[in-house]
Length: 315
Image (cartoon, rainbow, N blue to C red; front, top):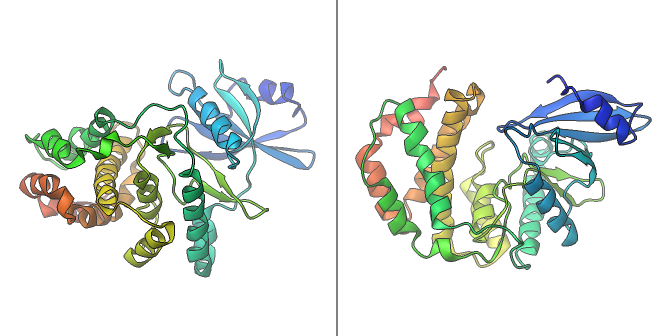
């Protein structure tokens, strides 16, 4: 977490010559974050190396959300050639940690997060690419490409065909903006009571159920079935078939991504989340709409290669 070579000059040019640059966080991508602190103020420096990350989608989605009245971090300065962006600092009151410190706040905070989605879904989709069948299939294939070989399973036929059968119709809904990573580690509680949004650069035009799944089947923290059901009721009418389908698709993707983070990127800490993701996955696969996919999993993914595999696993 050493700042990139051009960071000091960049923040100085932005008017922060008196500031310190302190490590803040890394994430599952190649992006890193630093806090810029000085003279009673602070900002966040995003380091997104251009060889690996394109910051333009982040900036475009931030502008779109801001125009609609939501709260992405405001952009204070940018140098896309270096992959450096100076952002408004939302502080440290992240949804996940706030709830962990006071469990009594869980339900009202989740209700606020659901309210934000409901408000966002009142607007038509922004100028983003559609969440189409090819994208759903490419993401679902991360399971067969990375997860199966990691647990010692050979390739198996019929996976894409099972998803085609299940997703028929869902992939044609491009009605709203899907943030795609809307969960408790990407939602900030701001001093004015509103919610700040992070990590939305992969936004697409897609189905309203997707971000509900992202929030309520959170890979990084337990969301009880009772809270999940209550929040779906709080949202209002929800297409429960779409919710289960997109839940299974997303969880298959995440199982593959977290395995890839271990195998390719040397980040084994994400493996601790695999049993939780399998718990969500099993609930989704029980829905009748997932019958083709559930049948494939039953045929080719033994129970001992699911959640149980990771419970005592040490990379």
